[in-house]
View 1 (cartoon, rainbow, N blue to C red):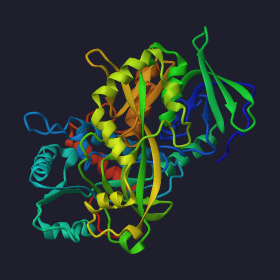
View 2 (view 1 turned 45 degrees about the horizontal axis):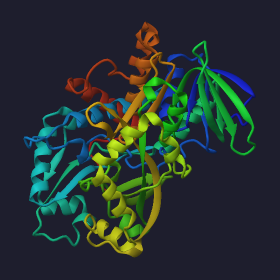
View 3 (view 1 turned 60 degrees about the horizontal axis):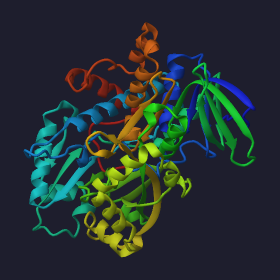
View 4 (view 1 turned 180 degrees about the vertical axis):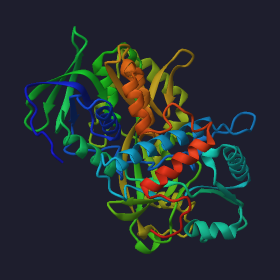
Length: 507
């Protein structure tokens, strides 16, 4: 990757991207496609791209499409299933697939063929109440063509064929059920992000600077932004001036948003949640599982802690992970500071954070219990999904950090949000992305919405509209309302991305 090593004392840019993760990569590539003459500066505090939340080892969900994540389909008070969020996420992932397919088809990126792979997405539950819930969920989702092809079964023999590790040694008197979507995928967002930045680094007018901390953001009288940075090794100080600033720094976005001083950022707080995985180190066990199997989260647990026995493909190697196990730390980033949380406390967000804390005592209790877990207790949790698991086949790995959004609420004072949120200034000159899941999988949709908010005149132009339609054939239309269009774009993206509607157990 061709990277500019040293920032000038003062530099000028049209767009400043803070953080070299999947969000900044997606926005940078989209903007250069829409307006090739833009000058873009990328600032990253670490020594490489995608080293935090976008990295494959740190990303809790690689290919969120709402096929198997039960927290996206809550049961309502009348016992019906709310599919609103699942439909929205499924459509957003289809939009991401279209954008990646365009980049590949037009030779815009030298994407590795294995950055995305077909793999079944499954939900697995046990017990009468959970089985009844899953059956209702299946019936509700099957009514929408976005979930066409979903299978449901309570048949033990079929489950043994689908997920042998999950069924081996299980009490057959216990009622179990599962759904399966063969259209599911595994996405290595770390590899995708690094490829995008490699392409950006070769474009005229784009400069990438690694190892620089953003210290201050200030809007000038001419409405442009002055971004003050410091090199982490040499401690030299620099300024980057830009017309538009995007803060896509993962867990580090909240402190930078607060430093910007925009009124829209006031009242926002963050609650950090750390993660850990059990990683299988026995190749024979890894070879027996070929699916992403999601269960139901414990009461009070955050969405990133939804348990899953997950086949991954990382650096060309097949892996098997279980977790994530949640924990608490005051760091906002895996490579952050223990002072991140206390330094984020401000007069305007203290009340919302305290109010949200009082309303989320079960979450606090859950995190305390997770932190206190012994190795044997972690393996016992694994055995709910893999009854024959042996502790010697697994080792503990540290996953990434997530910062759940806390925002002001007129009724409750403050609420804890599980999801992603774009906070933009009134003049559209600065925007920050906060939150976590589903995150990376819906990055393209999130960035399109950001462009509408921050570049409204350009987005209304015929040139940008035409280009967006070229990049995303379904742009401006609803895949959730048009079955024929969905089948058309799915067939195209399947072909370009090398995916298939039906998968077997082979790598």
